[in-house]
Image (cartoon, rainbow, N blue to C red; front, side, top):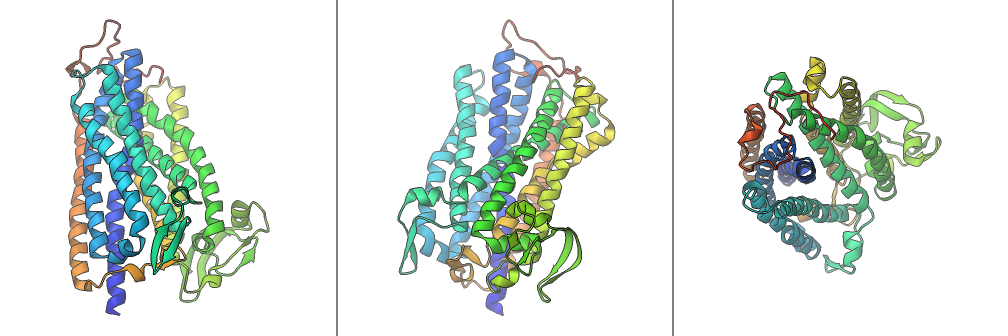
Length: 464
């Protein structure tokens, strides 16, 4: 029993660390490219509103990057404390991939972020634009290598096992494993949607607090446009990802859909309460045959049930509810972005003309991308259990023998610190958003053809 408690606590601690860590790369990955867009618009139009947006969101990026680095370091410590068997058995694959992430991504971000923050006016516009591009590229490469490793753990290929240790046979098959293209695309879109609603939410808050600046209208439009365009694309990619998961991890799909017995024409459960003791669902509300249609593209398509995988399927309730939270948040994003963009355009790109309930909704959804991303990540990672390398290596096989009380103590410390940091992060972003910004404060003087957007011209939208 003690060993089981220690394992559960170790898994919980890693989940807490991963939950905290993923919040910040989820923002920084897409925010880097958004900054590049702001920078290019400034160079093309010389409208100081774009430069204002760039400089403000560069500060948010720097804050986000710093917390992402700190939380990533604590995660790496756990490989040696709680999961020593992981690197002993999988280190030949995980070690190089993590090393590539540091060499090709972290150095790019860390080096050129300084140029982004402090180089404007000290280096040429081309060099500054190049620095912004390299930071954005670095964040994407970081996601590339990390998601390659995680995808390999979900759909392992290109390896052989010798004396219990994993060795690479083909790096190409390891990196570009069957689930990697879907998982990478899904995550990049999730990051873009997280940033879209952060942009819209912060801008809406500025309007509500009556502290907008010359960039507020443009940033709000950018966020709503990103959300409206990318949500349908994310739904399409999610469908492809689901089909891939059905082929490689049918028990994860069974947990997501709450299917206990193998059946044809399985209903899509809008709500249910999975009960692993009775191996059934309570309070089911569903749409007949829709789950089979979505997952197999046939009304009578067969879905394997959890009872076909006794002892080798994940905990059902977290996966089941996590999937619905992710989808529900995505549908709310779809409705709010489409309605907001339609209304914004209809009223002449005037954020002050948007109804206050909509502004409050967008403000409340500023961090909705975090909710959807964490829920989806739980579906992915808990859905892999009881394996750490799917079908080949269980989580229990790589756990340490650290006593449960010691893990519980460090878990409590992590929770306390992380909660304080999240509250501080949101508070700092709120403080920066409410701070008065004047475009003329920028040290770089506008060019001869510059269009200076007055701070009071909140409704000026201009072509995005």
